[in-house]
Length: 425
Ligand code: GDP
Ligand code: IMO
Ligand code: MG
Image 1 (cartoon, rainbow, N blue to C red):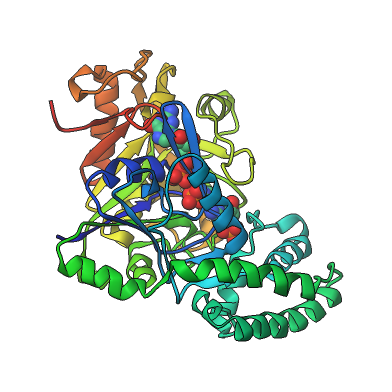
Image 2: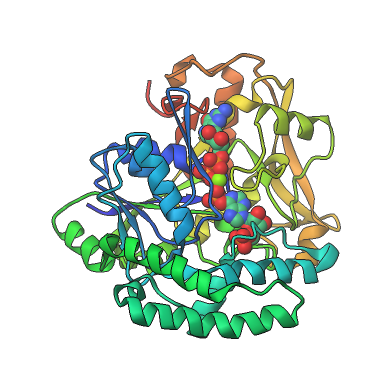
């Protein structure tokens, strides 16, 4: 049974967690493969909201074994706050596995994130300030501390102390507030001890599961256009959310991946800075933000909003080998008289077919829109494609035509069961 991967096809917050929750019913393992607690993955069950940052979204099903794989950067205070939150709400985390190869985030990473953003002045990236970039930079520089290092408490304490001493100098030189090393060694020593029972060789675990025909679901965080290599650099995150990153970050081989599901909203949003071709600054944009409740799960920041961009989605299909799309938040378009879909790009009046690789070109693109009639009907209660108004069906058909792959799940509300499967009657 090939592995299923769920990947954001835009700039994040596409509703990945809701689709992962739905797919979790038929999967035994749900695996985070990159990113860290910059993610905010929301699942709503009977009006109760779960906003998960690190623990895989499949945790809400008792049969699922949640795995934090080697490609993730783990903030231990957040991990255990989340475990405590979940367990206090009746969701056992005793099966949780954390890769001993995963790198850990420490307070100095957060200090460096803040210093680096402050130094950029008006040209801030708009990071989540969670220390994600600095933690991945340390992994690259080969000075990171890994989850498995917690197995030897004395060495773990020594590694933290050594690194913290160096980092404190750099933080001090940059005008930041130096960290209390003794306090940190003690606090992380306790967190490290708590981590040990969850540690596992997740690569062997997943391959053995695969050999036993278990169904594995890989949960992408962030998204294609936040990918360090393929996104709108430098306004990106520091990991590879794209399908290649799913393989590296989980240890599953590229040929193990089968179904690769791209998640897109029926419109587009972005948190933080960077180019955004279809961004709206008018009443339509305000309406998308208000009706769609477009405020960040992690930072509470307002998300920028615009129409759906199929040029981006076509590029996401190529980068990830997407096999299908899930189209979420279609209900947010319910009240519009007309809706638009970006089907092409113009640069100085000349059509652009490939997604531009230059920042200044992206900034100067004029979107080409196809305008479609709205449906002015509430679709939230609809569970069969046949119930959808013709204009909503037409919208989905245009997306399929423009992107070139089938739409499968269509989201019609925030609750776990607010979806329909397109293509079935
Ligand atoms: P993720 O990071 O991709 O998992 O997405 P987030 O959880 O950050 O943001 C998606 C938001 O949209 C959450 O508040 C979800 O509860 C909500 N949501 C997901 N799908 C739908 C949908 O089809 N309709 C509506 N109205 N809300 C949705
Ligand atoms: P989920 O998984 C939306 C954005 C930040 C910023 C940029 C870099 O919920 O879709 P970072 O802290 O990662 O160095 O910030 O990436 N960003 C996200 N935007 N959804 C996310 O995650 C994001 N994770 C990071 O806003 O622009
Ligand atoms: Mg999110």
